[in-house]
Length: 63
Image (cartoon, rainbow, N blue to C red; front, top):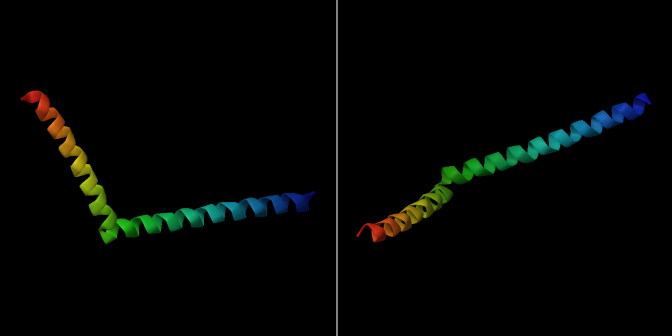
């Protein structure tokens, strides 16, 4: 019985470590993409385009 408990705890710990490694990898990739400027420029450009559309829409009712 004690061996079964040890095996369960060992397997559970392994799963947690695997999830932590995946989460760390995703975090590193995300930071690298924002630092490179490519994703940041795309995100900024998209938000600027959306804001321009809202401004044009609002101006059409103001005139």
